[in-house]
Image (cartoon, rainbow over all chains, first blue to last red; front, side):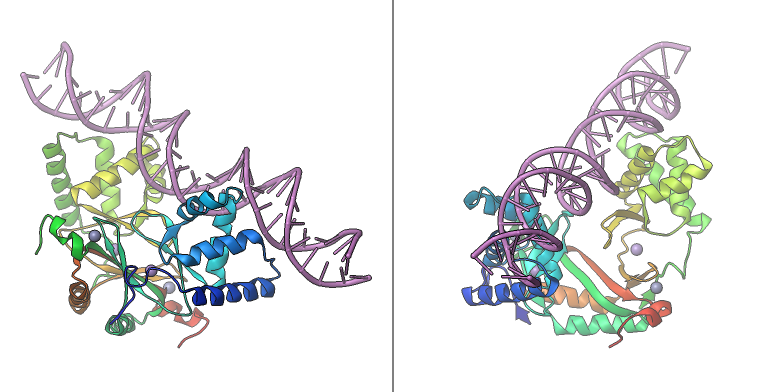
Length: 164
Length: 164
DNA sequence: AGGAAATTGAAATTCATTTTCAATTTCCAG
DNA sequence: CTGGAAATTGAAAATGAATTTCAATTTCCT
Ligand SMILES: [Mn+2]
Ligand SMILES: [Mn+2]
Ligand SMILES: [Zn+2]
Ligand SMILES: [Zn+2]
């Protein structure tokens, strides 16, 4: 199983950031959109930390350095990144729209600690296969899926009331 | 695999409804809450159709027969049912809180058709086992999980743009 | 029956998300 | 290089579902 936890790879390399920014530039050009200072700053800050941020969280982070950039622009830029395929939109149990950097076609699922809030990502081929099998039994053609485990991470297991 | 699709069992039997209403009555008593005409009507209407309704949908349905019952009461009664264990709260891709009748400790996952909106339910022991295995690899203790497949159901497959 | 406590329903509030709009910036055609 | 059409920005307003407030009403225990 390929592990891709937040803890394991806390941030994108500057090489990846450059690649992503070029990809965005191409997307903007293709769509007839414009490159701006704001977009550059927002995208840079977003890519720097591989997390699952809300627009507001990212705005607050950016606002410390760049007082002049507004929340709306951060919000719109994240939407733009999602459209361009550079970010994935995710909604977890708190029902807030979150964004995470996304390289290529990759898919992963999430383990979410209800105690400390940490999010661990994983990919599992067996799981993907089993999902297809289940769908087949129903004649269902899967376009995408959402799978989240909520519980206690390794460090927080001690805090769980009951352990089966 | 146990199939529990909406289509297969479109509604609760009147026997089940009676059982559920007794369970609710016990819950109310235990909590020092009161039995009311409104609660009785709302619960009856809710249990009659085994679906995934929003508070507003259920309110609209009830409002046709009972003009005097307000949205707020429907909303609060659904919350109450969730607390009592008679309903499960679910949020799908449209990000609206939905409620479905829930008997006992059962758990099931969902196949959601993005074309016609139909929801098919299933339980799969292999899946539950695999989920535990994955969690174990991360030292993660699962309290609950969420799994949804989005795609095209048997009837709507023809409408899918691309079939792999 | 009496009355404390819970319930009801309309209206107000909350809060994340999305839209509006006037001012500003980008960038291409000439 | 410009001029200016088109896109962008950011503050403020709007939206919409979820939740809370509050005065009037109902429940149900003595
Ligand atoms: Mn992720
Ligand atoms: Mn269901
Ligand atoms: Zn934890
Ligand atoms: Zn369908």
